[in-house]
Length: 249
Image 1 (cartoon, helix red, strand yellow):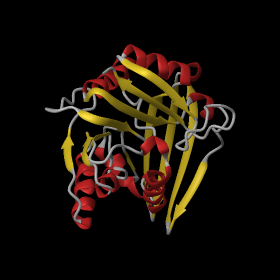
Image 2 (tube, rainbow, N blue to C red):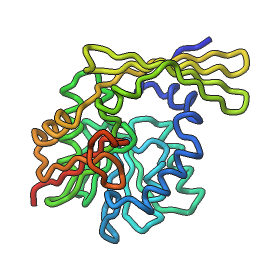
Image 3 (tube, rainbow, N blue to C red):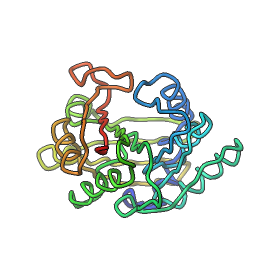
């Protein structure tokens, strides 16, 4: 039996990779890039994918003609992302950097932070700093698209343990609300043969109002909130909490 730490523990991403980044996840990214008005950018735009993971969005964005840079703290994820790009002959730039301190030499036209990759630092000031990093990475007039599971959505979706099976492997995920809905704890258990691997993630969750205020404090303007990648309103029919904003021209 082994136990991995939180999101900064590379063992977590390695052990649970197949459940976090399934083939369905990659197919969903392709579909969203083909259909979403929020993920449609000018031809040749310079795009930053901050917390890119194994390149779920990074590599297909590059295939669509964008100049893409992926940034992630995990060596294992960067290695997988580079291997994926090499396998398709796609040119992508990858950097292993901390999302709080990444400082590109040249600004981007678009900055992305997708699939709830925000809020994982223990100090809320560090999460606010990530927004400032995103703001500072953009050229004047550049656009941010940040996607996560909003607090309002989680309030109706935190359920009894979720069980997922892939072949002979079994994964059980249990979520718990912490600190009066300030944070969420997710306990993972992976059963693979006679080996059991456990991991715990704790992250801050945000409502639309909270996220909008944070983006404004980070310097963003023209802040908009959407309830899905199709641009729907953030209401009772929302599927995701998506923030789009700009660095002032």
